Amino acid sequence: MPCWLGSFWAGINEKKHTVMKIIDNIKESYNELVHKVSWPTGKELASSSVLVLVASLILALIVWFMDFCFENLMTFIYGLF
Image (tube, rainbow, N blue to C red; front, top):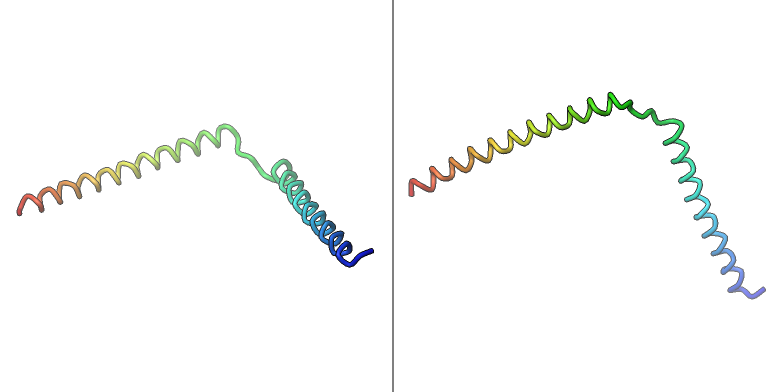
């Protein structure tokens, strides 16, 4: 067998090994998602969603208030000149 052919086959075996590692990783990930993860119930999910919605609204109001105050402050400062 020519020298270059041996390295060619070694490269193919290395690629097969890499592909097998990727396939094993996907299988392990699927197994973990299906059998080991505890998914929230519908009630828990709804409760968490409402909490996120309320927190987002509060944060949006705080940012709006800060923007409103800063705008009025800058309008006042520019009005002095």
